[in-house]
Length: 191
Image (cartoon, rainbow, N blue to C red; front, side, top):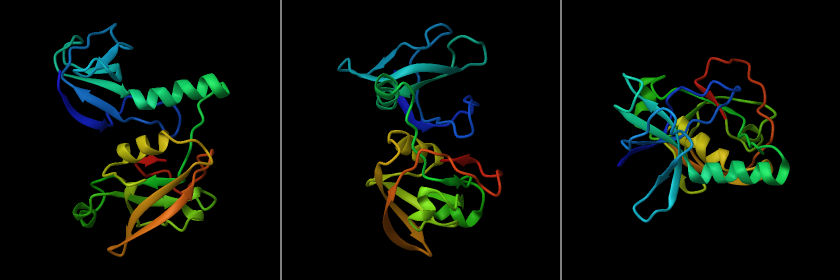
């Protein structure tokens, strides 16, 4: 099959307040019962774990979605070492991409709100900033940002590149292990 998209959020994970959906989208045939199978590249290397299909018939007739192997490796490693997943949080709620026409000209993730006790606020990030890179890797959607942060553990330091008033800035953020609280829960996603 061919990979047609990365970091896809398809709205199927409803567990918890801040689910990570950053699927690899492919046209590889995945049928009911084959979830958990391997998605491999042409060299036979594991790149994902098949997890879902989008199908009008219930059998393969559309797109398939796989969990990236690097994310699975972190989850399995955490469970083996700590007995549970060590989830890091930036402490922001992310604005939907189409929330404001003014946001359309910036390729980044807009901060709708920050947790006052969260890692982002303590590093100086605030509502209206647009995060464009995490450790030098570009992020253009809430799913991409969530995937990057989900690879980290509480206490990890991450370099965030962001735009404020059309000026690019960088800040080092020490991630926290608690999601935090927000005055409004109307934002699209929390990270």
